[in-house]
Amino acid sequence: MGLHSRVEREYTEYTGHTDNVFAVAWSPDATRIASGGRDNTVHIWDPLTCQQILTFHGHPTCVLALAWSPDSQYLASGCTSGLVHIWQASTGMIIHTYRGHRRFVRTVSWSSDGTCIASGGDYGDNSVQVWQAFDGKHLYTHGGQYRVFSAPWSPRAARIASSCFEDNVQIWDATSGMHQLQYNGHSGPVYATAWSPDGTRIASAGHDRQAHIWDASNGQTLCTYREHTHIIKAIAWSPNGDFLTSAGNDTVLQVWNAETGQLLVSEPRLHQHWIRSLSWSPDSTVIASASQRSVHLWPWQQSRY
Image (cartoon, rainbow, N blue to C red):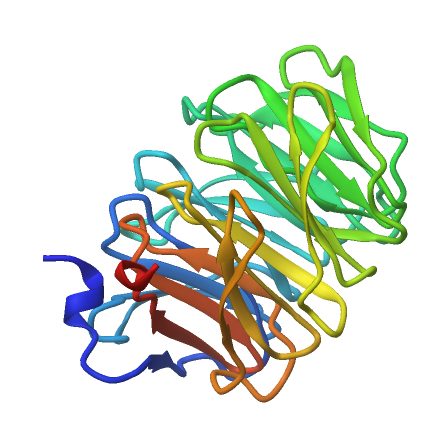
């Protein structure tokens, strides 16, 4: 039974946080959702009941970034003070704390084999650092970008795509740090990037209110999406590869076709304020969106499209 069939209302809502929620991430095994934000905590909760399971305390400042390990056993979280914690997801025990960033860890992602982390720093740091997840051994630092906002690891290869306050996305080798490709299709800061599940395409979105899909092998623009009326702060690819969801300062969650860029659904009723993070359920049926003090779970009726 899919998650969509278990959602009884039009949407459900998790309201366990006491301040703005900046990050949300669905576990790969579909059993839990992690969320974090300005209350300096990470919450683990059940997507079927929206009931809290655990609260992780350990960050001294706002939690900005979350990522589950591929096996759903561990969670990485980054905060504004520059720390990255690796947590055992079942207990909340901190396995390791990485202290290589000066401040503002805006993004964290795992390698596909679950052994390494890429973490990116915003204000006052301006780097992507790659390190071993469980002992914190620093492997290298990728510099040259001002205010890093996202640095997702390719699901199929040792490549990382990093975006920043400048109008470009860089792809580089995750084992050596060697630069491979730069995408220049945007006209302002690029706040979000996401790899397609097969690793062949990248979606990027930002200040210019546009989202681009482009070929990860050569940087060729395949599709440009222009339906948002304000800055786009989050973008996420459905695990089945067919759809993208995007959202930002216009408070509207949109779902569109990943091949054609056709808008399928525009949902303005979920949030009254900006949306900062999006995550799909592993079966591509439900979208989690974070804004203010809550996370909404919206059942995506993909069978209509």
